[in-house]
Length: 213
Image (cartoon, rainbow, N blue to C red; front, side, top):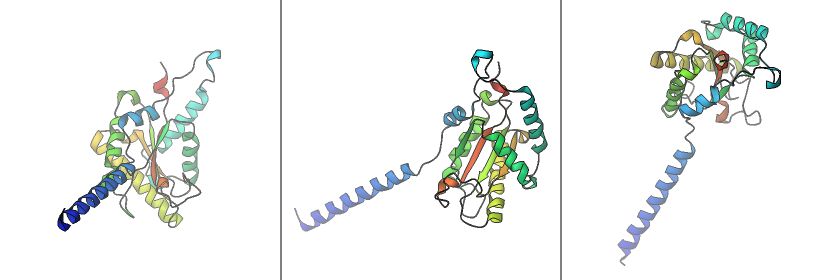
């Protein structure tokens, strides 16, 4: 084997290894979810019936929740008070939900191209008959980098962006999508505030009436 052959062979091996590593990184960094995964997470649990079937929904509490949701429908995301945001979070804690690691362009509310598949999957899921009649909260969250006021505004703009995308591209009713921003106040990983996992959009199915049959 000539010196040229050895050199060429080494270059091919090096290039192949580099391509393999790049492919592995791309796969590892793919945080997009499927329509099926979103549907499974957001489908309401069947309502229980009878004394032996476990705890049942309180009609008075359901009515109270419905009344509150009606007060925040069609409201500007920025107009929600701190108390209203916290009340939404309290109600959402017991509802079917999913955290989507939707990335946005740096210091922007524009959806990053790598996250468009997740938003499209969300649109298909929320359009599915299985979720018909539900009200959804779209909550924006940031990481801990930056000031509170800036992050609050950024999280609100990002939630609004998702709502606008869903309404324009999937014909969803805007009144069924309640947007809220939490800035950096509800980190998913409190020990690592700058971790990208904190930059997310949480979608919550607030209306479980579709579970009753």
